[in-house]
Image 1: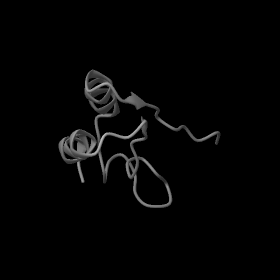
Image 2: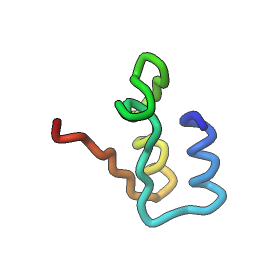
Image 3: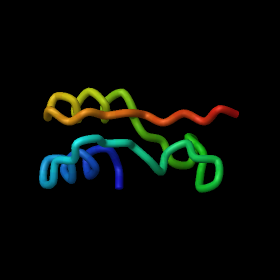
Length: 59
């Protein structure tokens, strides 16, 4: 699922909070293998009226 697919899911069933995942997660992939535009996702999610939070690792 890329950003556009995830945004479509937000449109279909709007959550109270959206959290992008599956990009830049060391256990699954790296940004070079699974790039995603977090800023685009956050901007478009909030344009739809849904709060979006990007989780960051403390490491």
